[in-house]
Length: 471
Ligand SMILES: NC(=O)c1ccc[n+]([C@@H]2O[C@H](COP(=O)([O-])OP(=O)(O)OC[C@H]3O[C@@H](n4cnc5c(N)ncnc54)[C@H](O)[C@@H]3O)[C@@H](O)[C@H]2O)c1
Image (tube, rainbow, N blue to C red; front, side, top):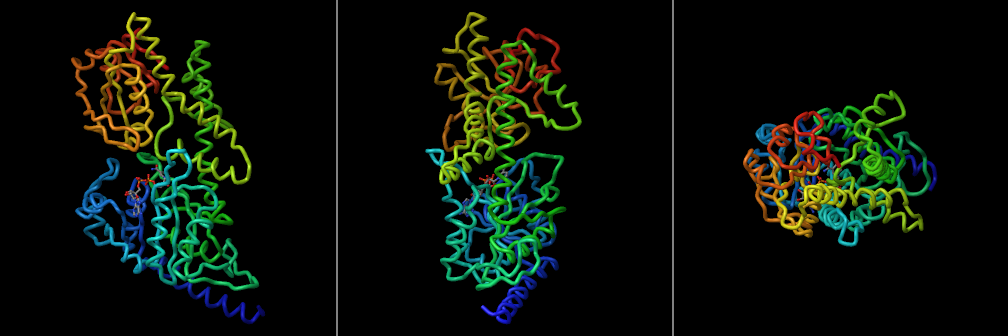
């Protein structure tokens, strides 16, 4: 390609990117968020609050209907925030994919679980990409936010979108936004980027817009356009050199947490044998003003991210014949924690000349972490399963779950028991699996016969220390 022709193509591409970025800057763009879950809903509301006409797409008709009435279905997102956005006309939930054609930016926030062989299940991403492809038009920006292995945007999403006949070719822009004179065909019909979601549900310290947004384009024009979009609603954005680098960034963050949690879980087991309080040790280590970040032991990993995402990388690493040993070891240690809790409970009962068989056990907290209403991958559910397998009679209490929802793996068909002095006294043991702030731990210890504390939730309780087993 000669220089003149390249310049002409750069000009055409620059105009297309300029027209899109202007719409973002003027807040006249239409923004779509696909997947109105724990990640997609708060993100859609951030765009809506800024004044963007935001359309939320979801295949779950019940969620769409509820949100359309201005009601939130997620505990920590108030109804008022949803209803205000709906009333102003800035947030419209729908299941009608045909409306994707009207959108300028389409952000994908669908689930990325593991399948029954613990391999990545990309079916949600594939189905969504197929649906977008069917309605794709030139000039649109597509951003994938679902956590996934490096290469998903380039290798999985891009080919599906290009089935539309439209192209996202190499760009005349470098990924830092500067114009480069590349040879070959430049510019494309649509733009595609990856930007990892870093939502921490229930975190009151950081709102969605305050968490810096990492962005990587499959080409430079895509990076420029995606940054222009997120710059409107996030306090800080950061471009990395590729979609793969952005995908890997998110995995590094979650693997870092997974490995460090495994480290403290292992040290907890050693400390228990050595008669040292791991919680006291962590508090002391935390006082070092540099080089140490505190992680805490617990009953096992939970949630949609930490127990799952690292294994996306393990799977991809196999293609490169590379064993991810830290991830495997951390997985092994963390997933053994529910067994440790049950063994500690059995030992404590044994010391009282009781056994687990037929014992009545109350598990406190089924959410995977405190003060949220999300039970996904919760270690509480695994603990309940193990207890049942050992013949115990299990009940639970959780202020966020009047009934235990059916999950992909469990269906206990239980309702939350009332937390009164009488009911507490009826159980042979109480297991504190999730340390919700609303629990009165002194009251629980006072009326329980035995308390197995997996979260150091009873640290302030001074009465009846003989009833408490920290494990
Ligand atoms: N929950 C978190 O704390 C968190 C944090 C960071 C990243 N992530 C990542 O974000 C992604 C989404 O997670 P989430 O927690 O929001 O999941 P979620 O299950 O809460 O929500 C996903 C939503 O997508 C909808 N959906 C599924 N397929 C669809 C389709 N084809 N079209 C439209 N809607 C569809 C579902 O009905 C659901 O409402 C995952 O990749 C996850 O790993 C989650």
